[in-house]
Image 1: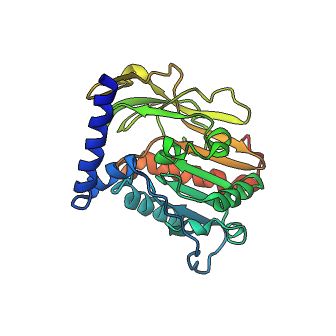
Image 2: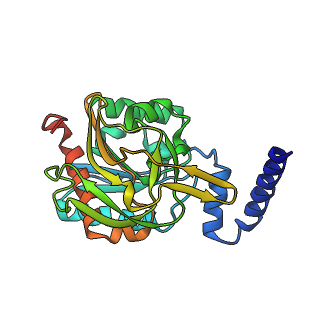
Image 3: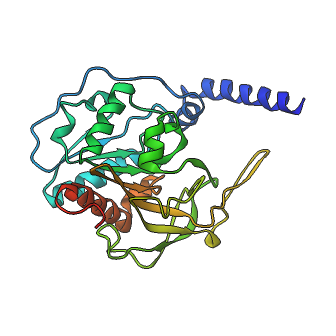
Length: 290
């Protein structure tokens, strides 16, 4: 009976959220997290002339939409590209992942992309491009469980499965393990900040081709999901929060940070993302383990 009551309450919640979704963007985002869209693009966007190196920023959301973080993140990446002389194209059209289009780019950023945003053909185009030497940066929701249906991506790009996050934006401290890495050179060894802290089913430390750049100090916040009747322990012990991975001949840079717009106004995090782009853009110019 308890299980049936829970199911009934969940059904009521989905109906209420669905009704309210037409009135408030945040409610729409939560509703989409429960009821992901299956919208896929088939006609690619028109892409302007781009100089090399070119960066593709993709922020399509079939799932939860980080409505404030996405425009703030795009603005931060555009500022970095302008400062560094990179060209940048932002789209939410998944048909950009095409075997004829992707070679125009040196780097792809999934900026809070969620909800299985690309179809099977587009997935294969991205996989082939990355394994052939492309550079990928996955930001926050690009590491969540809305991508669980793409097993190759979970296993070979992220390397771990998202299991949840403590509720709300919480202060915590990050231990920077590779201050010599281009993405971490502007960080203190102990970096205190506020974010939504993701937990995963395992640590990627020690996996082939993985370098952990920074880990979360779980003693500085409570890694626990408490919501209504839920009380889930999310502690990992060893808790990587920024890491890199070799993917075939390509490189992936994964950061679980970046839930709110404020993250992308934070000079240290903007420097991390700029360094991440620099690292993946140079993937064809130096060994991937550097």
